[in-house]
Length: 125
Image (tube, rainbow, N blue to C red):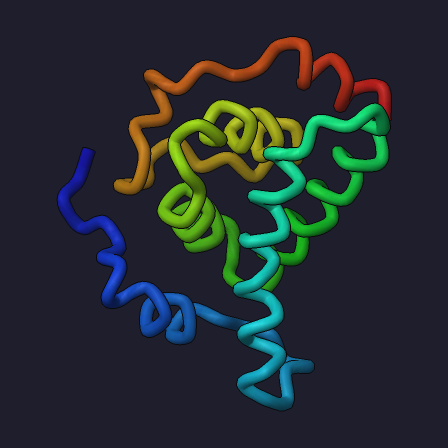
């Protein structure tokens, strides 16, 4: 793993420098896209009965994040901001969307397992 990880104090600068949303007309929209990570955490932490709807919401947020930051930077931001307890789930979603980048300094993806049951659920969508 590389030592050029995103530092907490540099996170917003890093994110803003890599933000590419041509329709963004204000800094507020940038922060709305950053807040998607907070929503992802809530969704991944939720354990209610409607997993299909929750999984679709997670997929939508992940697609937006990878669209506005790019795939590699999006992966880096997500693994930096998400607690380790969500890394396995996050890896599974990114793999399913075919946007998982294995060589990012924020996580050693080789040792993070995927959630097979989640992957089976996602394949039914």
